Amino acid sequence: MASIFKLTVVAFFFAVCHAIPPLPPVQFSVMSPQGLRMQILGNPGITLVAYHYSINKDVIGVAPGDYNYDITDKTGDYWVHENTDIVVNSGDVVNYWYLVIYNGGGYQDTDLSWTAVYCFHSHGCISSPDMCYRYPCDAGCDMGVPPCNGLIFEDNFDSLNKNVWEHEITAGGGGNWEFQYYTNNRTNSYCRDGTLFIKPTLTEDTYGKGFVSSGTLNLWGSSPANLCTGHQWWGCERLGNPTNYINPVQSARLRSVHSFGFTYGKVEVRAKMPIGDWLWPAIWLLPTHSGYGEWPASGEIDIVESRGNINYKDSGGTSVGVDQMGSAMHWGPFMPYNAYHLTHASKNLNGQNFGEAFYKYVVEWTPTDISFFVDDEQILKIDPGPNGFYDFGKFATEVPNTHNPWENSPNKMAPFDQDFYIIMNVAVGGTGGYFSDGLTNQPYPKPWNDQSPTAPRDFWLAKDQWYPTWFPTVNNGEGAAMEVDYVRVWAHGSY
View: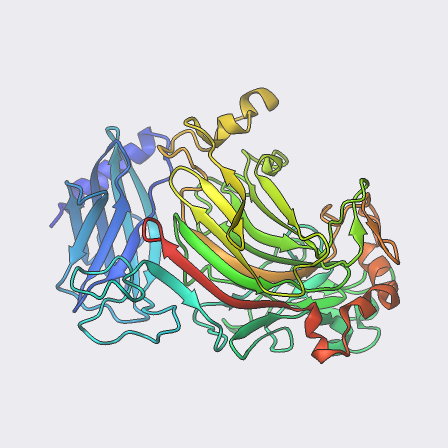
């Protein structure tokens, strides 16, 4: 048992006297037949790790938990703590903080929590005491089946699991002033025959004709399930008037931010992109805790995104519509310095498109590099080099005197060395440049300009041009939906 007073004083002293580097994230697993395992990756320079935690009880700041332990030796590549005296049930919340002694300095991360959820995969919740619940598993478990074989997350969408996927509820979109708002409605997100559908519809289909130019869209909510999740950019309430239209499209964005995140591993998604002008589907990852600061300092990983337009070309005549997909990483010290142009790749199908069939999109993410694949074809591999992404982005020369937000991390992959969660959504339009004014659409041109103060109105007034390309009366309009067959994640080193 650790000396709680001693650890608290040490943590406070070093927090005051040292810049705090991002700490390796704590990984949790439930043990068999009972118990809890906590561990962090053993980065060079770490000499002690202390875990302080309680179960279903708040632990504020550096206050002692019900359980307090110093770990002074590594187990393999990890600093591991195991407590076999406790029982952790599915749904229990472990509230914790931890201290790391690194290169002689003490650093802590506080006010953290982890929720035990035993199964994310299609094999059913494991409840037998002789089985393990989450990877890594005890030696006595069957390593041939999930989760012991490294599969730490799987959803085959036999149903829409609300314990895993939270619906974002906001009109703020993703910062690109898109023309959709996100809601929790089975019109826009539902599962059928083992497939998740994320389908955009018209706002006035829900609220009636004339609503976008004269109504009030109130998303504040009144209970945990329907509270507005994004206040920024007037995300919780919009008022329509003849020049400032309410978002004319209703859609869905699902995220695993409160249920599942991972650091390093392989994520595989099999999906079909939507077809229709100005549709913007995306499957991507964001950092759970933004350990390096606001976007893009903490990074973003785009597994796949596309444009739904059938006949959409750049100035050179290259098709950039639904027959092209892109993968990217976004990163930089602060806005507007986002060096994603160094970590971006696309693939064109040349005659086919990504909305006609399902394709497999894969990211393999390790402590040394990250690679992107489409149907097993590698389209991008990024190794930032031994000095990390700050040098890779040439920020010292491109933006002189810019602070390096990753300088205290021992990992060259920073900011891509922390837990990221999964997001899936279908956006529409926007003025952020994804549907650039310099691209050409046929048979009708882009109906808004990115600099227009009335872009949502301009878009909506051209409905008779773009809405038929969604084929809303064919197959219940599902051609305009992104369809997801499955999502799977394996722990690093297990695939």
